[in-house]
Length: 190
Picture 1: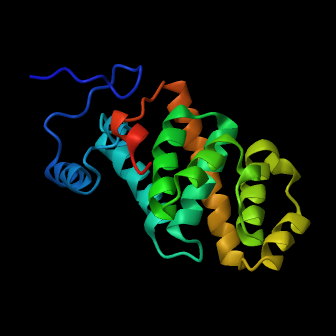
Picture 2 (picture 1 turned 45 degrees about the vertical axis):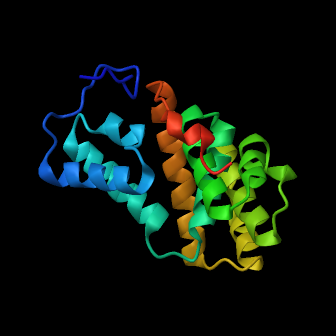
């Protein structure tokens, strides 16, 4: 039996055995990603919570949207950078590197998205996500109109707000529980 570092600082072991559907999902993760992300392991102490988390994540990050998968990952990284969430910066920084094919873009977004060579659409999207993260109560119609002016629909604005909101929440949970990123993320897509 191997001893594996727990995914968080909390003593909340995964349900054992995992329900068949959860085990299938974890097996797909191993097949596609080469690992089960620690955020899933962390939530697997309560299958209802895991299912709620994965349902929301999959809907926001993988479902049909006017935002590309890369753009949604870019939001995740910028929000996580502002919140200094180690787990999400490592995991979603790897996703940006993979989806963009550009390791430098991933690093720029992690460190300071303002130095990244972004088009007006991406810059506006990230500026909105950043403002939502630091001062959401100050967002007004002019901020939404600025997004429309660079080509986003109202549905896209909804998606930007929801992705940014989800990562603001998950960043706080990850930080509060000392969630550890999987070691595999660090070297991926460089």
